[in-house]
Figure 1 (cartoon, rainbow, N blue to C red):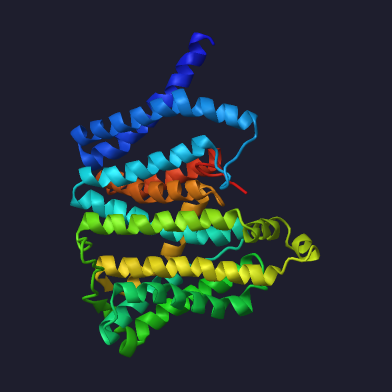
Figure 2 (cartoon, rainbow, N blue to C red; figure 1 turned 90 degrees about the vertical axis):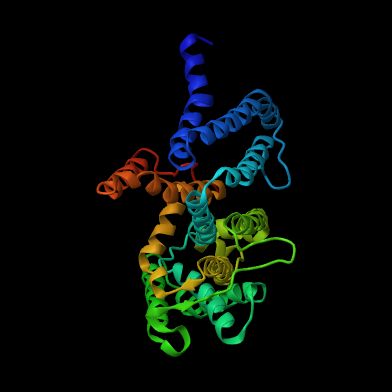
Length: 372
């Protein structure tokens, strides 16, 4: 290995990741806390490059995979990311914690939409409607019937799934742009209904005083407590998504995405699989909506516009369609990056748009690439 190759390897393995961490963390956490974060990341990179990557090469050469299909290096990366997510809130102020809680909300939505767009290849432009249905389900149940957070959590997801079934039955036989237009129309219908059904949703004024979740031994009404609550839901969601991807239904979805006609010819009930995926995707959006309503303690139709659906779709495409880790990276990037550019308020969205265009030109497969 010559000097140039050694320098390039060190830059790729240590310098560039640390520079990225400092660029993100210094505006949010300050210099001192960013140094602690950098030390933590450097230690993880050191362990990964010295021990984990070497073992991963041996494992790859022997073609051994775990029951989830993850290599040893992949498992280490997930554990390291989880440790960072648990430790980071301890060093954040209130504003930064609120930003990272928003990252978690959008991560749940992007992972739910990825079931349709990435795994199944169906374009849904009205996904934020299920988010709104879940949020309003909890708001209405708490305001009119006195049902608390834990009692409304599953009901919000179920309500979103039921509405998804109503739209899925007549529209899933459509393909391509026609399906996208139908889901866009559904999203707008939901928003208009929420805005005009005054007796149920209080119209454009929204519903206030939505109770926060609570447990006898843990305080969840604080910022850090709520952050860890949402993080637990994301861990469960990621686990379920990996199990689905490695299951028979996950393989059916890939077959339908690649060639629906061929999948039908080998006996796969494509309509049934698409309906199940549509309902499951909506369920995740509804649960995220319940969490959002409990966090904000207020919901209104303005939070569930078409642009939000496009925003979530951009996270899926930017991170890498079908790639769970990539989708999470896309959600993190699209939420945190505009906050980092807040000082350039007049040019923030211009810079942001140019960065996205550049990304799509030079890495169209997404941050971490597409995965089957």
